[in-house]
Amino acid sequence: GNIMMALQCMLVQYEGKKVYLFPAWPKSWDVDFRIHAPYKTVIEGKLRGGKVESIKVTPPERAGDVEVMEPK
Image (cartoon, rainbow, N blue to C red; front, side, top):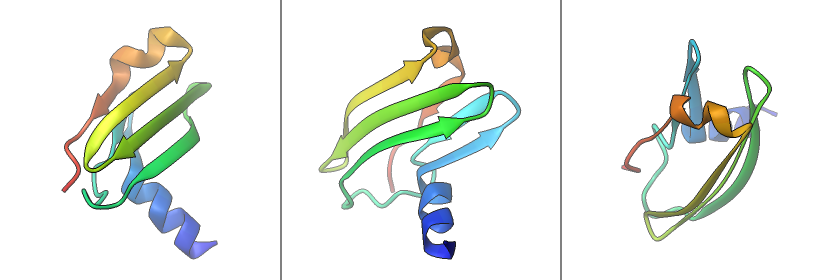
């Protein structure tokens, strides 16, 4: 459980209504994810070779609150 929580914190962090993706994610790690965020938000995405291939936010009106950060 602790490792899963640590990975989730590396992948996504929240502050108020803002959602930050990849705040501590290593650039060399590829990932596919589907994660539930606050305010009934679901975020799905794919990162390959340090580049974001796709991000889908449900409901779409929450997309403005999602900030994609550059993986380190």
